[in-house]
Image 1 (cartoon, rainbow, N blue to C red):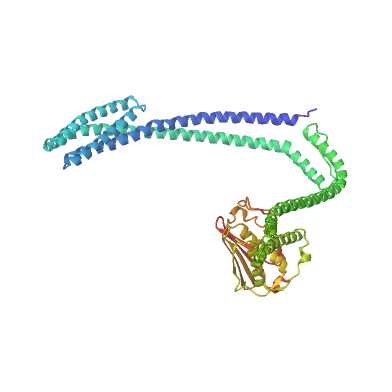
Image 2 (image 1 turned 180 degrees about the vertical axis):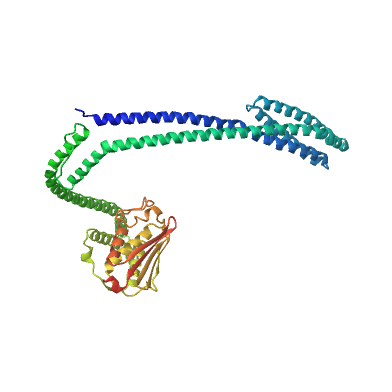
Amino acid sequence: MKRHSIRRRLSAIFTAFGLLLVIFGLFSIWRLAEVYDASAEIRDRWLISTRLLGDLNNSTSDFRAAEASHLLAPDRVEMGKTEKEVAELSGAIAQARTSYEKVLHDSTEDKLWREFTEDWEAYRRVADEVIRLSSEGKKAAGNRLYLTRSRTAYSAASDALGVLTDRTVGSATEASNRAQAIFQKTRSLIVLAVAFLVFLSILVMRHISSSVLGPILDLATRMRSLATNQTDIETPGTERQDEIGEMARAIVVFRDNAIELAHSKRGLEQQAAMFAEKLEQEQRLTDLQRNFVSMASHEFRTPLTVIDGQAQRLIRMRDNGITGAELVERVEKVRMAVRRMTNLIDRLLNSLQVFEGTAELYYHPTKFDLAELLHDLCQTYREITPGAQIVENLRNAPRTAVGDPKLLYQAFSNLLSNAIKYSPNGSLVELSAYAEPGGQLIVVEDHGIGIPPADRERLFERYHRGSNVKGVVGTGIGLYLVKMVLEMHHGNIAVESVEGKGSRFIVRLPMAGQSNA
């Protein structure tokens, strides 16, 4: 029984192919090493030598010019500048000579280099004499020496350096040509080797495709047919004594079990759907409870503290007497705290109605005064947040609108509450309303922390909060509720925000006929 025939065959094929790849890799490394050696010779010898000789040509020419400048200097100040330049050039030439001598050279280059150094030292002695005569005020003697012996010595040194430079440039060119030839030869050999490997790969893939992949794909097609409940198929290859034969016999077993599994699949899917729905409901209830406890524990603490404090204040003032104005002031603070708690409770109840899908039962569109609704909203938040600076721009607000005033009040309350909550205490918050062709435009603008760009796409998702609101209590459901209320009214909302500078929420509501459609 040849149970492992395919495995052995493929193992032998891929082992041979792997050995060819190893041989190809070693061959490529060997050829690339030659290319690297040729490139290293150019980089470490000829490029450095050419650069250093170029620096020497420039520095020696500048030195000759500095020698002439010293003769032409009109005073001691100019002579001092020229002598400083001569010293700097001497240092640069000495450094270039030292660097050049560290590079590997052949005997011819060493000979030319010695000739240059001897000629240059001879020239330097004459040049130093010219500068000495010039410094002592013997300009005429220095000039004669400059035009005779100095010029002859400089020409000899310059010619020797020129011969050495030409020799170096020629050798660098030869090395470059040699490296290019090695590279081209290496590239051709590697291309031929790659072509051979590609051709061999094609042969291997054709063999694998015809003897292994073809039967496997045929079995896979029959498996897909079984997956679509086509159980009346024939499975060839069950007589083969290799891995494909085992797969064919396994498909027969699978076919026998597919009918039974198909009957039980529908029942399992129904049960899974029921469990998923229940799990989602439990998760949603858990999230709502957690968010309610978090927000309620924070939001209700402040008004309750105010109520308790004012009550204790009234008890303490009972024996000392209390004036009518003081009593009214304390009672007003208690009422303000109660209104704040009532507003929070109304918002939570309305939010729960929307989230539980029962908002349509409470959606009763009527005609109402939009400007009055927005004004009442601003007055409410002035009372419950005395530190807020709320500005109304309602002179051009439409007096007649159609919609559910309670739901719209809740939506605009969330926008105004967010503008106050995420703004510094006392900063300006503006609420504006205008009539526009086809509907109404309501804008809530603040100068608070703004919204990061990464959070704007998910701004109206349920439970999503911005990444920069840590430390500010919230549930992440306010803007989601706003979006749902506006969708009920066939309106929409847009946001413009710059992080650190503020946000601008723009609400558009359609005309009465459109919102009632």
